[in-house]
Length: 142
Image 1 (cartoon, rainbow, N blue to C red):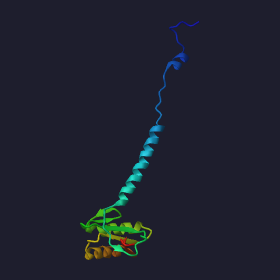
Image 2 (image 1 turned 90 degrees about the horizontal axis):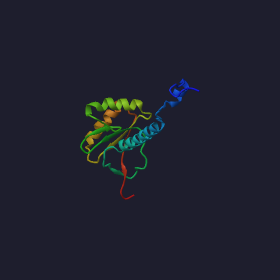
Image 3 (image 1 turned 45 degrees about the horizontal axis):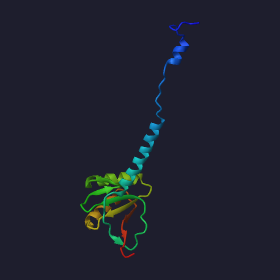
Image 4 (image 1 turned 30 degrees about the horizontal axis):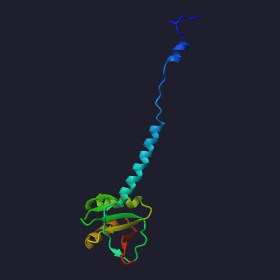
């Protein structure tokens, strides 16, 4: 019979505590948070600036393409990215090269001057746009 002071190697192995951290629940939480942030950022970015679009009787469908937004203060955005007048041509060319449809949709506030809109459409055509559309909202009476 072994004495109490003598321990075999098997007894020592049984007495040791092996601690492991299970990161599966932590990973699940991180993935859920990632999905939530991805969804909320896409919703927030798609809202964009508030632009008071002009009304038109035929404003049912909006074609897909590169969207250029001009705010009341004259800020220009290409697909939600604020650009300066100097950057407009290069950014439009880059976005049109990536776009499946080579169409530029101009979302201009009703207070935007016609000269600004014409300048943007001219730059879009020089950047390679094959079509141009003006975004409107349905009339209040319909």
